[in-house]
Length: 464
Length: 102
Image (cartoon, rainbow over all chains, first blue to last red; front, side, top):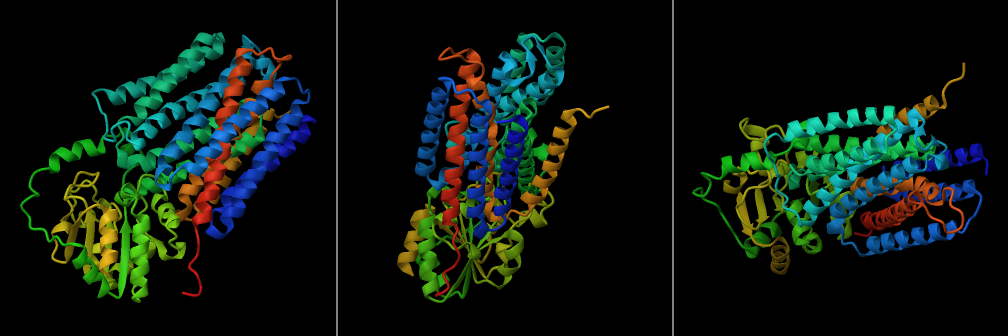
């Protein structure tokens, strides 16, 4: 296949990827979008095979490796529980990063195969593009591994900070630029390896100071990086499909990071510089035990809800941990049978990744037109009878609105306190990730339900 | 004087960033998780580089380090492609509308 013809096919697959993302603008068109994405991928892979032309025996190995990876991927996709989606996405990011690194190394060792000049005298532009692709890929890889370990609970989710952290990171970033420069003028492979090692280290250092609840930002950011890495490699390989995709994914991740930061009213740098939870936790653990709290049991909660005419459910990360989404849906079904109007309110940063709660509710067969975003539903709390907060905390804290001293001041929150009564399903009175107390717990119209979210929801259903 | 082909690729890149910007803002927030998994899958189109690396200049079963790295990258990207698209499919199938008869 001629170079020009294959370039046109790569362009087509790039366009199909754009349409795949476009499909996600509504659940109805999303499946079709995903299908177009798959077609785009098949075109890209087929064209690559055809453009190589000479079918040596190496082809069979390529197919075998493709098949092995494909089977593993398919197996994971079918087995993974929906609650583990953040870990899965983090893990997948690390694979994109690592394959970008491997392709870059391969191109560096064998530039002839990619038309980049010959070993020891690689074209300058290619060398720069390659270095960028490899460095960003390496950061994506090690960063995603840390994010994965934190989400999986293998590594503590609390931020790990040490003195001089930011200085070290800054120095390492500068050294990347210097190493790329040295690599370009000397063409020495030593600088290439050091560059890779430093990049791996940066990814690692960048993510360890970030706390578990800031993961929505981190995952989005790594998503963005994996795109930029792919684009870097795309420039090296002069492949438009890869360049288009890299740019799409890069900007997609960047937008998601922005949305997540806005949901927490924090700047991107504030999140990346890390250490949020660690600083504030110590300051707040003083004077909260003595305030009176009304706590109730499943029967009280069932009574309140049975006499309500509308209920708004506010799910949070605690629902995911307790896997309570199915029990919750059953409870809602029972409420609906009693002609009670039920809707769901989702805060942008609820859970551990963008859209985390929506997926869990969809898994439990909650129709998506009953699920609303913060801006859509926030005015409805004043007219609702009961707010049922399950596993969420900081996103409901009125301190964000009326306490300028609070670390979360200015963060958009759900106005649950405007409801006639508020039910809080929580395991204890402990503070949320921001390490601050929630004054809502001590309000007159709040009833605390101390239990595991799943068990409590099941008990309420029995009492309805 | 001719324009360097790099400039054309840079143009594609910059314009795609803008397309990405507008397309992604129109994605409904409830589908942000599938958005992440599908972007994951499509960024694995890096497999085209891995295939070239895996096959480059090898004559019948004589693999260089460069080839082997390429083959490994093929497997990693394939995990992502199959895993990413299938898990997205699985998620999207769960998004259902309210039944009319209720």
